[in-house]
Length: 146
Length: 136
Image (cartoon, rainbow over all chains, first blue to last red; front, top):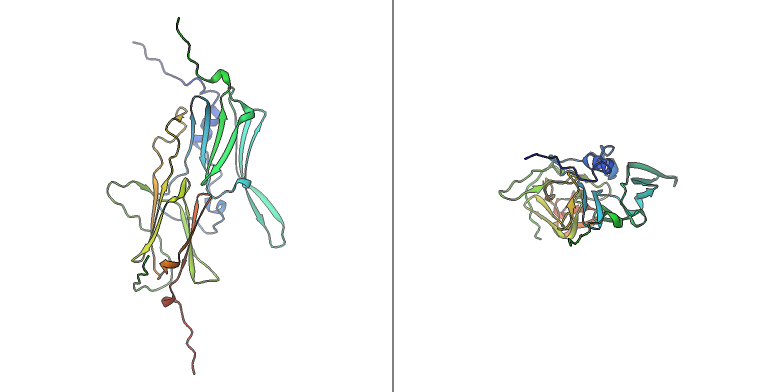
């Protein structure tokens, strides 16, 4: 029996997105600054921030924990096949000058087979979910055998 | 919640003890504690993504502040991970136990859960506040 290594058909196209989920939080080193808590965060064996890429028959889902951000501090953009997620931290100085710092930014190419017009994002309880609908030709179809 | 008092010295919230119980798998959340400047109270912020109000248990007793955050399901059952780009195990619920070196008025603890961050305000109990004694 010959052993064939199975490769998910989308693995190459998802390359960027996979790499993103394996190490999504480069640049988030100083989490305490992000959360605006001032001092260094403590606690041993801290729970890592979870991230994952999932699918069902109709959609792909990217789910990322991003606690401490409000909806208006997150930007999710789909631009010509590139999906960008960025977190901003807005601060207002004493003389009312508003500064916006980008503290986290990830860009990835969205593979073919995604209906770009219908990509949606939701932030709930500090978890961001990006929903990417599969275009018709990517959906599994049952073929009847005659 | 009853206001239990115990003999304590300086007013500091110490670093935590992780209490391990058999057969209970919890993750310790990131947290930060500080004394507030303008009032006799401490603030503890705990990072609890994926936890809703109904999954939260906070109690202060016998010099310990205990926080349990039970997560809502990380993903629905019918979602399949895309080849290796997802955590293998469901993320654990959170548990944090802090030793309190100061008497807290547990009846007046206030809690706010927003954007996955729990912020607790722990007022120091009246009995342990420094009092000014006037000299006649």
